[in-house]
Amino acid sequence: MTSGGAPLFDRIAILGIGLIGSSLARAIKREGLAGTLVAGDTGPGVAARALALGIVDEATEDLVTAVADADLVVLCAPVGAGGAIAETIGPALKPGCIVSDVGSIKERVIAMIAPHLPEGVHLIPGHPVAGTEKSGPESGFAELFQGRWCILTPPPGADPDALDRVAEMWRRAGMIIEVMEAAHHDRVLAITSHLPHLIAYTIVGTASDLEEHLHREVIKFSASGFRDFTRIAGSDPIMWRDIFVNNQEAVLDILQRFTEDLTALQRAIRRGEGETLEALFTKTRAVRQAVIDAKQA
Image (cartoon, rainbow, N blue to C red; front, side):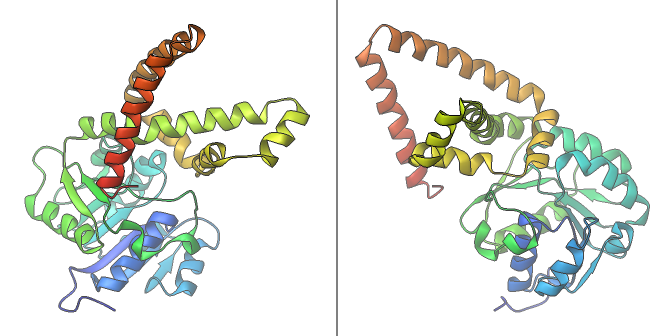
């Protein structure tokens, strides 16, 4: 079912057709947002799988071919690949084309991509704050974005019409739009996404390093807490490697604050300060309720 009317873009190219890229493709198809939708992915057989799923009109392993005559190009590859991709496709982008992305860091992405875009091509970075631990074109679903936030971080002087068109695409995919500066985005995401993933990777890594008999029992008797951590830690390792390497400053700043809070919690446990612990747990429970009330749980 589509929303009817003229497409928002004549030709959209999605580069990287994993979870986010394939979900976006499905939403674009559902809403009739593109006259032609093409997937570009250099992974062996990935483009062919996307075409076989029927979620795109065309698919190719050649990124230059994918972006030819495109009105909108959305980079859905790991953030560390953004610069190389932009360098490859830059000369093939037509004047007036909009380039966007879906990465969860923005300052570094802008610095990597912008120098390779020719005059007359508009950069509107974006971050749909949605996802699962799954990957690959088969894992996507159009409803992934419903009721979630999409943060757009246009650089100074960005074309307002290009911003409006990218915002409208995500709005019709079901998202709520927020516009903010790239540096502010990276600091916010460092605490809401990057630090929780780092903690999850650390906890699951600690469990995997236990003595063999304890390791077996941790897996066997995993309760909901540890099970939730393993879900987060099951995310794409390449994607998260690139996020931490490219958002070092914000992540390290937030990690330092977390370390200080953890030291204070250690002290309260050691001293048997039950009131301190209860006050913390009461405050954090209220935060959880606020997330639920905001329909982001």
